[in-house]
Each structure stands twice: as structure tokens, then as C-alpha cells.
Image (tube, rainbow over all chains, first blue to last red; front, side, top):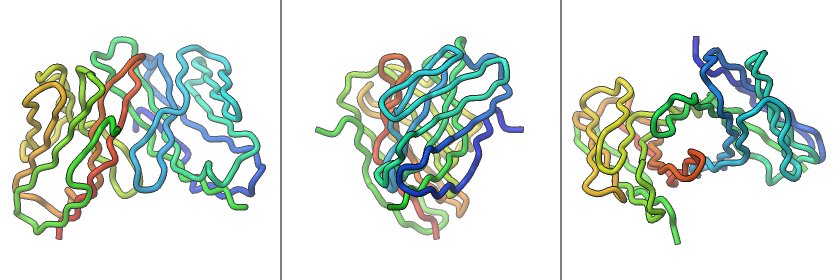
Length: 113
Length: 111
């Protein structure tokens, strides 16, 4: 069993839709949670970072963490064609040296006009 | 001004060859990483160096040898390339709150 499982998709939605991307994890030591966005033929870039249960909002993006259920989500409101990318969840435990991240397998999102 | 750069961007080679990928970061970070991303987009850490010292080695075949001549550079040398080595290789460096800054990737195809 992988430490981090991510809904693989792919996901195709119309412009303006609300998108929900999800990851579950098995390692209770994970305390820090991130979402990276990766455009085609580019490297991943950090989108959201959170370390506590609850919601964190940044513009059209909301990251949600439920540590009791070992479940994290990323919501995108009013999705745009420019949101089309692969979204990767990533996690880190508090005891990890030098920032080692464990990634989910990525969800490919396409937002069509 | 590129923060993390990699060369080459594309690498096509025959099985059995030896090749190197270079990475440089101008962010002043101490920690750098190599990741492998397979065709299904799964991103897996291979190595990490902190200030020229190897700190993470994730059960990677010893055909893969990272080298860090200084803290701004982390190169990856691969001996005796195999078909299964075909992937995109990303270099990254670690910033504040463990944010990782990724390079543009090197797409390796082994024929």
C-alpha cells in the first residue's frame, strides 16, 4: 500500500465548475500538507501549504485537511482553462530531515471552455 | 532569471550508454534533490544533498550516482542505461517552510 493515495483522474470539467481533488494517507507522522501544480512539460510549483486540520483559502483555491480521517482535499472554485494541469498532493512528517516529501501520483485536470 | 536550471532538457540514448544530467540553483539553498517522474506522473524522490553531503538515498540502483561539487550544483550520472530508466528527472532545491523549487525537468528516453 502506498503511503499517499491520490484520485488518479483524469478529470475533465467545464469552465466555471467547482473541482475537488483528494488524497488519503496512511502515515500518522505526516503533519505538513502541500499541493503542487504542474503544467505540461514543466516542473511542479507550490500552490498551497498547510499544517493544521481545517481549511485554508487562497483566492479561488481552498485546501482542506482532516487529520483524524487522514484525508486532504483541494477545491478550485470558478475553474478556468488556465487551471488545466496535473495536481500533486505532497506530505511531510515532522521528524523528517531536510524536507523529504512524499507525493501522491497526481491528478490530471482539464478545464474546457 | 531561472532559479533552478537543468541541462539537457531532452536526452535520447541507447541502452547500455552512460549519461549525465546537470542541475544548478541560484537561490542560495543548502538542500537539493533529484526526483524521477514516471509516465503516470508519479514523482518519487531519489537523492538529497545538504551542503554537498548525501543525506537521502532512496533505494536507487547504484548505476545512479549523484555528485555535488558545491551547494549550488547537483549532477546525476547514470551508468549502463536501461529501458526502465526512461522518465522525466527533476532537480529541486529546498527553501523556506520546506517549499521545494523544481527545475524544468530532463526527459530521458532510452532506446
